[in-house]
Length: 119
Image 1 (tube, rainbow, N blue to C red):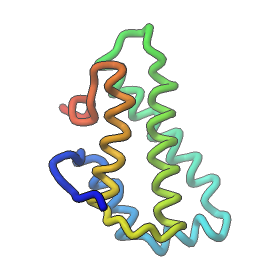
Image 2 (cartoon, one colour):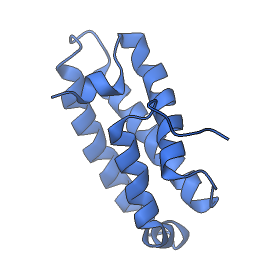
Image 3 (spheres, rainbow, N blue to C red):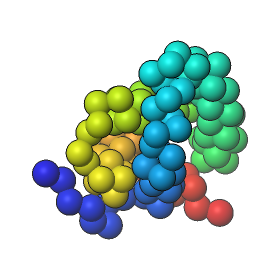
Image 4 (cartoon, rainbow, N blue to C red):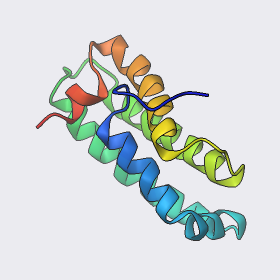
């Protein structure tokens, strides 16, 4: 099992802790089919936010919207699977996993989540 270490980004830790804190509410949206519109709104909002962050670090030749959508889609997909499968990994462990995965994508552009989220 993966242990939570300094390898987790604060943003992914907050993300998974929020889902853990409201696990039953999120599961009811998913299992009752009410999630679709909610998921779409999170995807659009998240991609817009990531696009703004990426624009600060990348030039216009980078596929910024695609990178942002890819990252947010992955985060949402993993969170949905974690909730619906009652995955035993803690929010901190999920944050480590998601940080590693996201950093592997961002490494193609010489970025990390921490760099991207730095003020």
